[in-house]
Length: 95
Figure 1: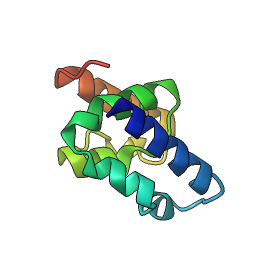
Figure 2: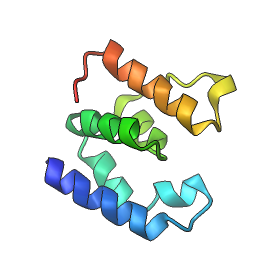
Figure 3: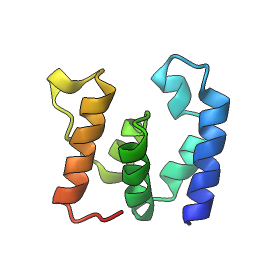
């Protein structure tokens, strides 16, 4: 699963790097396939998010049904990433 996630994440980044709209990034087929991997992929996303903040928030919300990002954190990538990382730790995820 980790190899598949890494491959899809690499494809997603390469093909959406120049896109400015999060919606466009989020509907990319590789991103959607990652969402389709379900809850087992959450720790992999959190690890990736911790190493290099990126637009994983849509996927995390879709998979977990949760959103720990406070309104004042929206649009601030590092703060949003930190909110999700903290959420992951509080929910027992290890990566």
